[in-house]
Length: 526
Ligand SMILES: Cc1cc2nc3c(=O)[nH]c(=O)nc-3n(C[C@H](O)[C@H](O)[C@H](O)COP(=O)(O)OP(=O)(O)OC[C@H]3O[C@@H](n4cnc5c(N)ncnc54)[C@H](O)[C@@H]3O)c2cc1C
Image (tube, rainbow, N blue to C red):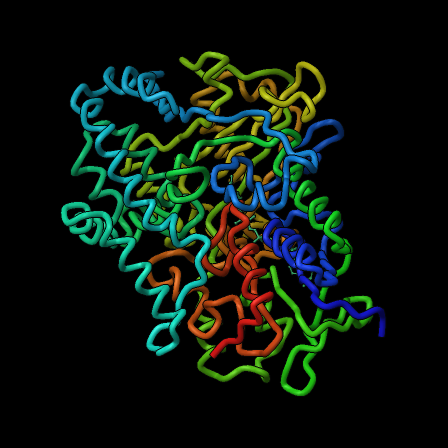
């Protein structure tokens, strides 16, 4: 038996690192065991060919919780932004793009060219939606309550949720309750006539989920996205210098400076149990490491079904875990480019923003329809960045990298990803080339990460962005499943800290922070 620790974290994703940093700061002897050869999980930078680096999965930072940033002094550990307050450009094939900037005057001027009425309506709509998003924002750092208990802290947390809705005031509260379970398409169509605007907001609502704009709950997932990030849900888009991996490296440095130990290339194969509580872990090398506390950053299915084993859990709990929908829908295409591509009607400054190919609600919904039946759309929905425009550390001088998240790449693709990947990538590149005619001539190399790759390489079951679908039925006190909603699990000493828990995925760090608080408080699942 090797050296014992107070706490072992399974997985060095950004949430595992955040959790480790908080535990180490509280003087727990903490060990992080990461299966791959680098920390960060889906928040990593990788080289696609020598000299060309990209953020492998997550490429835009807009959710990171400010408390994580300040508590863990992430900036003191080398973290910098190469771009902030990035604009969004919903692209139109005819070149009449829309600009959604953090500067409202710029947005208004651009929207006026499409619809004067929408330009007038937008500011009040945005203000209201931000007030609604704040209801969720207040919950991000809360431990969800358990339902139906007489426990004071559970009752207080429920009261806080009710108060948070009540304090919206009568009119807003009614509207919030009316729209929270609605589909985002209906909400947007009630307000606006500009397809590009509706398509962009619909995209934000469904990104990373297996929902279409017309699916129930898609308004809630939009609020969820808007709730993240800075004060008042400002949700400004940013890019870390050196790619998303630089954030994970800074979190790892913060954890280490507080005393945590991090071992990469250490895959946990088993969570050990003795006398009905956690006793440590076993690695693929056969090494056993003891600890009374084990915190899993792996997704709930992997944690309970593969690493722990169902013999330690009651059948109802096992069924709930098995039922978590984990069919991912996001793929990522990376291109190494010989030079900057020209997107028709987009100037160089605009090219440094987030470009969207989601020109209408109908376009997004039709792409989703294919995914429902295990197919991909020939008209894919894309979020595109060219990070090398802001960050010279990513490519050799004069060269560039382009990243595109492809929404609606179903994990259960008919024909299988191994056989379909080239055709899929060709289709995405053809779509990009409709907006950037010289793109194909500039491609030096390409890399596609499918949901299957995400599962194989990043250990995310189904390649799911949130480690399990997000929606009203898997939100707050229902996430990931009743019996494990407060980070503690039915097995004493075993906790969860990843995206599968409240408040879900995205590079936010809140799940890791909340989990550490519950570990330190000695929370037990009841
Ligand atoms: C294609 C794609 C694009 C995305 N883009 C964005 C974006 O632009 N912005 C954004 O905010 N979010 C984005 N996301 C979502 C975001 O990346 C994830 O929600 C988030 O990174 C999850 O963090 P995590 O720490 O909870 O889990 P993960 O990042 O999944 O980390 C879990 C870690 O546990 C390790 N692990 C698993 N099992 C074991 C084991 N048995 N032993 C040891 N280690 C183990 C894994 O190797 C991994 O390192 C994107 C996701 C995808 C898939």
